Length: 170
Picture (cartoon, rainbow, N blue to C red):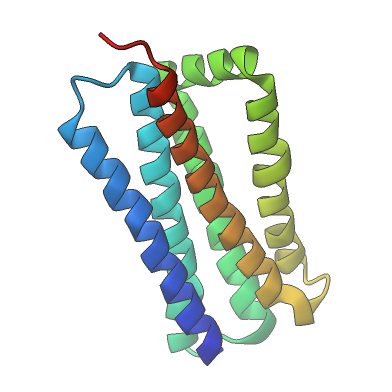
């Protein structure tokens, strides 16, 4: 687990860069950014925060003596809870629902990529870890979910960057 701790802390540090970058953009350019672009920046920050917390859950649990399947099952449950809490709380805001619907209609390929190639594959390993399908692979399942969540942050950040390039200049 010592190697995992170092790796998870490094992943949390990388996610912190996404959080800081997104927060900086949202604060310094708030009046220049369209609502849809601000939504993307908020998503980058939120996804980054989820990665940070999820990366540190097993690190903290190990300190309490939790090991083996219990460690990965509890960590995975916590990670799944974070994912779904963010999705539910985000979609409770009308502007976020409208943005999600608009993005799905105007860019179904990108929306499909996000959900089918990132979100679902991120959650499946967590569910496998919770269920104890293959205890030897549970650390790999968790790492896969963390990396895919980090890829989500990068994907959303890239969407923001390319929306800036294609946005008409004022």
